[in-house]
Image: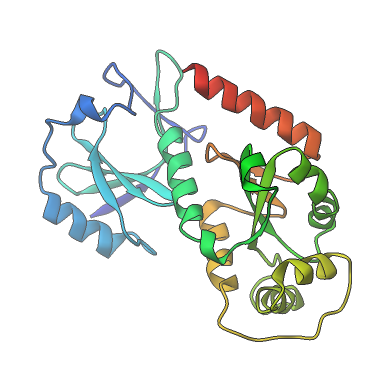
Length: 255
């Protein structure tokens, strides 16, 4: 058994069959050969794998494995696993990115009940972003100071914890305190204003948020996950972000 990590300008360029990867009808009649063997190999050889789905890909003899937030490929005979992207050499289209974005959003959305949410009234929500945040991060604090503006522009902000210095750091303890507070939103605001909160402990999601952030490739904060699944590293002013989200939404509506 060989595990191949593909690194070639971040993309494995292969010639693909015509048609969109997003059209399930294109592969509806194709059966997954060796499915039991493939599942066994994935569970045994891919570290940290949770639930996953095996689907046909546009490359003959290669199947796609969607394991939110990851997308991998495995050969039909289950001898090779490919960790990389597939692009159409004729059009330049990245055939993996859309699935990866969906997979990211799916993984994030599964934690929505444990997020701290700052939102305009539901009938005023135009966009929803998920933000990995650290209470001591300067740009996280800057983003939070503009929360009223984000909400005024129709942007719902859902916070996940990402203590940058790790799970043994003071930042981790501060995040736990915020998530364990009775009024989480108030505690988040106070912490980001530099107030020292009395430490609290409880059953909390901070480690789970942090682990997912690492799987998604978060390396700094704030890290914004947009509605299309794109991960954007860094602070974006409210007006600029709202305009970008409006454009993206309009573009998707035209497709």
